[in-house]
Image 1 (cartoon, rainbow, N blue to C red):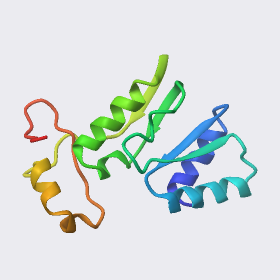
Image 2 (image 1 turned 180 degrees about the vertical axis):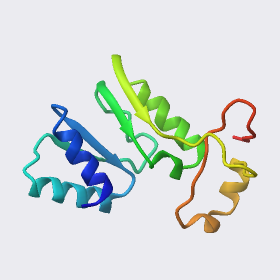
Image 3 (image 1 turned 45 degrees about the vertical axis):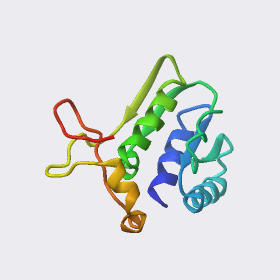
Image 4 (image 1 turned 180 degrees about the horizontal axis):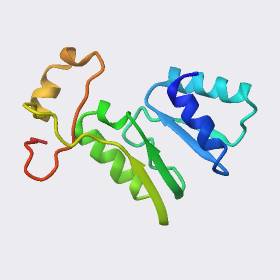
Length: 136
């Protein structure tokens, strides 16, 4: 079982309803098939392939993200977190992992966008903590 499907399966046993979101439609399809095989009907799937994809999510009680946000450039990470955390109900909980520093590496949005061919593989980014360098 893929990691995302395993996490969704575990969460489905602990929450009334979950929304499994990913940028990869093929990974979502794998998770959907694996959860259906296990009889889980309380999971919906959301392909987050545009900046506005999260706008219509209803307010929720918990947000959980592990080993995923860091694969998007810092401006995208910030957008996702602003959208998602803005939907968190009062008293809700957000649990996510995000690097805040990658030594000897900085992000420059202009340089990043100038060379799209250089960014075809999986990348890892950080959202800087106070004092770190980031040009956004």
